[in-house]
Structures are given as C-alpha cells and as structure tokens.
Image (cartoon, rainbow over all chains, first blue to last red; front, side, top):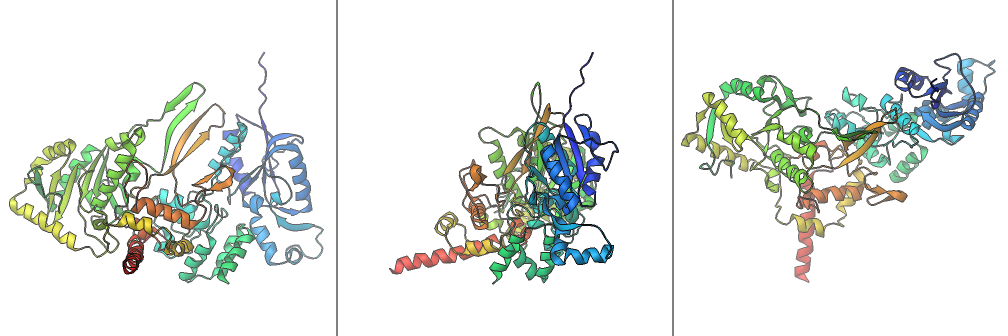
Length: 256
Length: 358
C-alpha cells in the first residue's frame, strides 16, 4: 500500500484588484500542481478550504472592510504570506487615486448615493499585516512567481533584486528610447523584472513595476526637465504605480 | 602607426570590394557570421547575418561590444541535483565575428587577459576559442578617443584584419586560423603590391590625423589619484541615475551576479551568471546593510577609476579603450570621459603651478 505524499499547501486569494495576478498564477498552475496542493483559489475552483496553509498569495489592495477581515484571517492561517502585484505591494492605482480625491466622492460617482458598500482608503497589505515576501509587477512576472514559490517550498526566502530596467534593456541590446527618442522613459528608476517590455518595442517605461532599489529620483527629474517634460506628469506616473511618498519629499527638498 | 607597419612579418593581400560577396560566402562556411546591423535611427548591434547586404559597414560602434559573444549577458554555469554538480557546457555554435574595430579588439585583449589569468574562466575561454574574429578599419567620429588610450591600432585579438583602401580591402592574417582562411580564400585574393602597402599606410596616416576628440594620457593615473576629491565628481553624481547603462556597453566591464535558481521539485537547480553593474546600490552592499559605496558619486568614481587608473585585477592597468560607448549611452551625459579627463587635468595643472609658485 502506498502512502500518499503530504504536499505543501497553497492558497491564492484576491482583495481589491483587477485579478491580473490571479490570471498569471492560474496560467502557470500546471508547473505547480505536481508539488503543491491548492487549498483555496476561489478565482479558479469552487471547492475551497479554510484553515492553516503553507503559502498564501494575495493580490489586490485593502480597500474595503471585508478585504481587511479577509486579510487578517489569511495572515493568521498562513505560514508565508506573499503579496503579489503592485496593488498588494504598494496600493498602486487605487491608493494613488485615493490620494487625489476623496473616497466618498468617488463612491458616489460610481455607485450612487444608495450604495451600502463600505470603503477604506486603499492601502497595501503591509499597512495592516506582516508580509513575508513582496513580489511587485503589474502584472507579476511568471518566472519570478515560480522562483518565489520554489524558494519558499525549500524553506528559503527568495532573493528578488530591484535593479533598474536599464540593465534588462542593455542585456537585450535595445536602443535607448530616453536618448534616441527623448521619450519620458522611467527605466532608470524603475525595478526590472518585466524584461524591459515597453522599451523593447520602442515605448517609454512608465514605471509599472514600482521603483528600483534607491531610485535616483532627483537626477531623473533633472534629465526629464531638460528634455522638456512636466515633472508633475512624472510624479503622477510614479505615484500611480506606488512610488513611496518620501521620494517626492526628497525631490522637492532638492528643488527648493 | 598601422597594423601593417611590419609588413615583412605578415603576408598581406588585397580583395576587390566587388568580390566581397564571395568572401562572405567563404566566411559563412566556417560558422554563423555576426556583423554590425542598423537597429534604430542611431544604433547598431552585432547580429547574425546571412548576406553581405545586411552588414552596416559604416557602423562606428554597436550598442554592446563583442564581449557579449564570449561573456553573454546571462548564462548557466552549473546545474545540480541530488547526485551531483555538473558543469554546464552547452553545444557551441562556431561564430564568425565580422567588423571588429581596433578599440574593441583592444577590449577583447583585456577581457582575454582577465578571464584567462589564474583560474581561467572555462565558459569564456571555450566560447572565445569557438570564434573567428575579423577586424575592420574605421574612421573616428566625434566621440572616438581610442588614440588617447593607445588602442587605435589593432595588435592582437583578431584572426584577420581588413583595412578599407577605397576600392579594395587590404587583408592581413595574424593567427594560424587566419592563415588557413587566407589559404582557402586564395583564389579571390591578390598578393599585396608595394602600391597596396602604400595605400594601406596612407589610410592609417589619414585616420590618425582624423581624430578630433582626445587628451594627453601620459599622466592619467597621477591625475586620477590627485583629483580623487575634485568637486567635479559631486557635480556628476548629482546627475547620475545609477542606471548602470555605462557598464554593459563597456568592452572591458566584466562584473557579474551569481543567482541560484531552484527547481520547483526541490531536488535540482542551476546557477546562473548575469551581468551586474558597480553603479547599482546593491553592488557593494554587505551584511548588516553596510554599503561600501553608498552614493552615486562613490560608485561613479569607482567606475571611472577602473577605466582610467585600473585596479588590482589581472590586468592591473587602465581598462578604457576609448570606444565612446559610455559617452553615447549615458542618459545623463556624465560619461563624457574626454571632457571629464580634461577638466581634471586643468585642475591638476593648476595645483602644480600653485606648488611651483609657493
């Protein structure tokens, strides 16, 4: 009689987000299935279990009360909590929008006055709970996702580098769009991982992966201003994908 | 000086440019031919070509130097499983690299020395051995300063070298592989006449006079040491994006990161080496979050020092070959090596004259 092997368990949960990461994970589930048991993945299966789990991947920001309740429960049940995608790691577009206008007026505009929905100002997971691994991306890169999973399955925290997109561009020998087209490319201050997707087709990087390790934002401001770009536009792009507020304080301080 | 100044040592030949297609066919018989092709309005890159028509003969510099063939941006070094560790030695494609300019040949020479010294890097060496390098003459543009770095004349690193003498190529072989190829190509080559040697000599003289960019490099090391605290570095640092564009494009930058990639089934994996850059903040960061070079200024100076002064690696000398790639690849315009050296020299000279006055 063979004894069934006890596989590590994973759960994949979504809070407020576009489900982009859930799709990436679903598309790559084939690679994982031989090595893990899916305990809960409401986006992909109908029979889901509660209770302790080895790894939970969480997409989306905490924007509603039930998101927070769900996240608190997930944290309590998970050995490793992995924030996947920029909404979960930085708050991304939702947080950026909330900073620009009131959540209340947005809600009224979208759902009218009779909505019973209760909203919170959008926040990344780590605003509320301890996050073990943050995997940025909009959406995440499948290879990085599998690498993170592989590391955790072997009891190691993954090493995720945040070198700038420029490295990936050079490794692919792309012509530089910032230099040749004077495009407002944010590659120099954006974390790589996408494989320099946009510059590879001649478009400027718009920073969707979040900022790289110690972004030289003052220098970026100088260079884009010299090229005639409005720095507010750059602010808003960076904020949209979750650049931390203190970066801009630093940039403004330099300017004064 | 020219590559052919010692014409008695090497045998020299000429090839009419009109016969280049036949010459190309012979090259392609050896392996995949790589040559500069135009990839955008301003840029060229070494790419596999199947016809001479694809080659951009007028390319001054490619985005990446030919180091990419022997030290690729990313490569698997070893694989491992429960039973052992295995050297990764993928099947090699023999590469014929056409049109390598003198600065890049000098760069390859430096890389050869670094990768072959001490415990030689077998991955680099076997790729290097599976190649045939064809040097090619060029005319400098406003960013070229190989003359200042002493790398304007190809002395080694190639199998054969082609000098463009108007309607013909003046061809010299340097290595046994080069000799073999010349023997094969004999039917379409002519022995170089005295007149051809003169034409070749004339080309290199004209070229030497064509440089508009450069500096006197005799005191470079002293200048780099004496001007270590020059405020110019701070000015450059303010503009530095730490994007690392300067290092992958450099023919002699060789720093890499090693990454272990575990397989999902937890019983095997591979170790990859990928290009890294000393301009990244994590490059000199160590345990305890201590960083030996925490600011862009520290990192930029470190790189400039390696290029213009050298440090204690196998080469132990300045490693810049004057190709101008960093200058044209820096989004901030702070890698204008010539302008930086000149500014430092002015400051250095001022100090010397102050000293003399005192």
